[in-house]
Length: 64
Image (cartoon, rainbow, N blue to C red; front, side, top):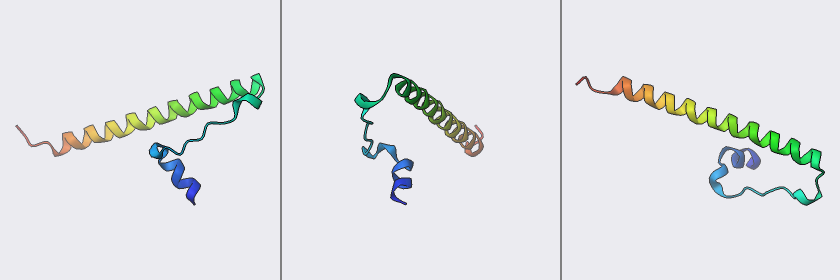
């Protein structure tokens, strides 16, 4: 349960970098690819929320 909460709020400062010194080059490349995919997913979520906010703002805007 607490793990899920931390995943929901990465801004809490609880991010612990992995011990990269022990990883092989191939594993590091896979890790970087996974991180890039996660960044893309997070950016898509940000864009979706911005679109929702924009639509709500347009809906609730008073006619001028």
